[in-house]
Length: 127
Image 1 (cartoon, one colour):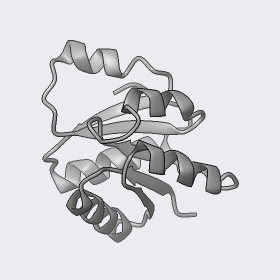
Image 2 (tube, rainbow, N blue to C red):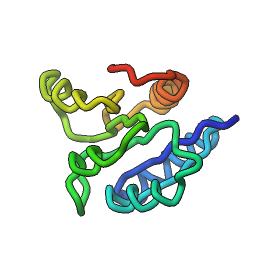
Image 3 (spheres, rainbow, N blue to C red):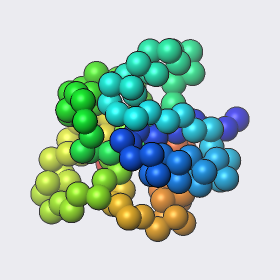
Image 4 (cartoon, one colour):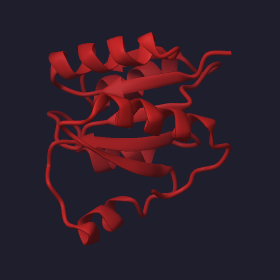
């Protein structure tokens, strides 16, 4: 059964690229343009939740921290161009369902490998 990944990013080119790459590697992909759109789409997909959400940190609309607080039982990996110290990353990864941080720009092979790893894990694990 295909794993489902939701890509949440306000930049269309990032959404399109991630969707193409992930679909090409056997994933089903849902996209959302921001956190609010993500929450709306999650409510519509109650029966089959995504296995992983890749979420940009800086987007218009409801702050990502507030969006993440509303998402239960779905693993989330931040995907951001924002450069952070290890201490800042550790702070972001404190939330129970946050399982990783992927730095943009990303290496395609590393991204796919990380997504495969995160969607195969049965329980959230910090990276």
